[in-house]
Length: 64
Image (cartoon, rainbow, N blue to C red; front, side):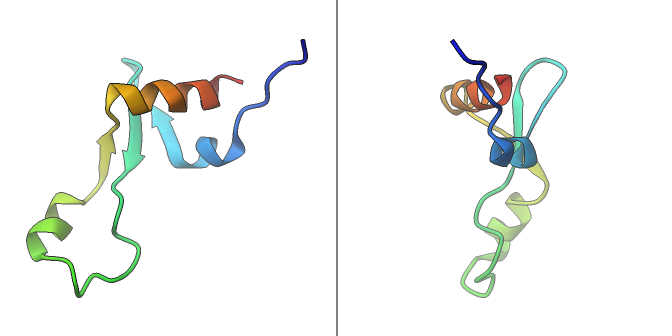
């Protein structure tokens, strides 16, 4: 079996914490901020941790 390559797109978008959780940037902040409420914009600051179901998929991409 050949070795699996890491998904280079995933390397750029996700980081693993020391405890093994997956950190990702908040979605929905690239453009169209006029439509968004101030509450949404405040809540979407910084990074967030992914749900375990999503984190499992991303970890497979990062394994390589």
